[in-house]
Length: 504
Image (cartoon, rainbow, N blue to C red):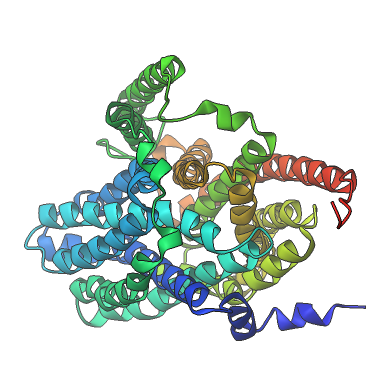
C-alpha cells in the first residue's frame, strides 16, 4: 500500500510548513530559497546575453563570452576559500555579503559602457555567488537535523528550478524586444529581497562563529595557490585559444596541453605544501572517511552529467537535427518543470528512511535518458525528444537533494570543509563534463566540417553526440556503482547498531 505521506510530500506548502515550525527555521529556509533563486538568475543572464552584448558593444562573441568565463573562474576557484573563511568569521556574514555583492554587481553590469566593464562586473557576480554557495550549506546544516536535510535542501533546489524556468520564459523576450541590460537588472530586486530575508540571520546567536572558530587558520598563501591551480584547470578546459573550438587542432594543442601541464605543476606544489603543513588549508585526512569521499565522488559524476546535458542537447538539436536555438530551449523546459516537485519527494524518502537505492537509482535514470536519446534522437519527431529526456530529468531531480544531505551528514565535524569540497567538486565537475563532451564530440567531426553545408554536417554531429553520450553513460554508471556500495555500507551499519536501553 502506498504511503499517503508520499502524496503529502507533493504539496510544497505542507512540506514548507513542516520545515518552518518556528520563526528561525522559516527565516532560514526563505533566505536560502531567495539566494538560490538569485544565483540561478545571475547564471542565466550571463549565458543568454552573450550574443546580444557582443552586438551591442561591436565585439566578437568570443570576447563577450569572457563575461561567462570570468564568473566561472571566480566561482569555481574561490568557493573553498570562502567556506573556510566563513568558518572563521561567520558563515552568515559572508552569506549576507555575497547577496549584497551579487545585487550590486548585477546593477553595475547592466550599466556597463564597454565589454571590459561587463567582464569585471561579471567577475564580481561570481564573487557573490561563491560566498553564497560556500556558506549556505553550513547554515542549513546548523538549523536542520540529519533527518530533515533532504526536505530542507529541496526548497532551495526548487527555487533554483523556478529561476531557470523564469529565465527561460522572460529573458528571451527581453533580449528579443528590449535590451540585454534589462536581463541583468532582473537580479537586482531579487537580490534586494534576498538581503531582506537574510538580514535576521545576522542576529541569531547560534549562527555566529564560536570562540573556537576564531582559531581557524585560513592560510592565505595556500588559498592563493589552490585558487591559482583551480583557475588554470578551469581555463584548460575552455576554448579561449585562436582557431576552431576543438581539442585536436594545432591551435588547440598549443593551448590546452601547456595549460594542463601548468595545472599539474601547481597541483603538485599545492599537495606537497599541504602534506608538510602542520595545519593544512586542505585537510586530506577528511577524504579518508569513506562515506564522505564516496558521496562526493557520486555527486561529482552527477554534476559532470548536468553540464553534459546543457552542452550536448543544444548541439544535437541545432547542429545534428537542424533546428533553431529556441527549439533547444523547448526540449529542455519540460524536464526543468519536474524540478518543482520531484526534489520534495526524494527529500521526503531520504529523511524518512534513507533508502540505499535512492541515489544509485537517480544516477541510473540519468544514464537511461542518455541511452534513449543516443539511440532514437534521429529517428523520432522533435516533440518526442523531451519525452526521451524525462528519465534523465527524473534522475536529476531525485538525486540532487539526497546527495547534498548525504555529503553534509557524512562530515559533521567540519561542515565548512564539506561545503567547500562539495561546491568545488561541482564546479570542477561542470568543467570536466563539458571538456569530455566536447572532446568526444570532436572525435566524430572531420577536419573539413567547416567547409560542409549544415545538412552535410548533421550526420557527423549526431554521431559525435552518440560518442559523447557514451562517455557520459560510463561516467554516470561509475557514480551509480559507488553510490550503491555506499548505500550498502550504510544499510549494514544501521542493521548492526545495538539499541541503547532508555534507562542508560
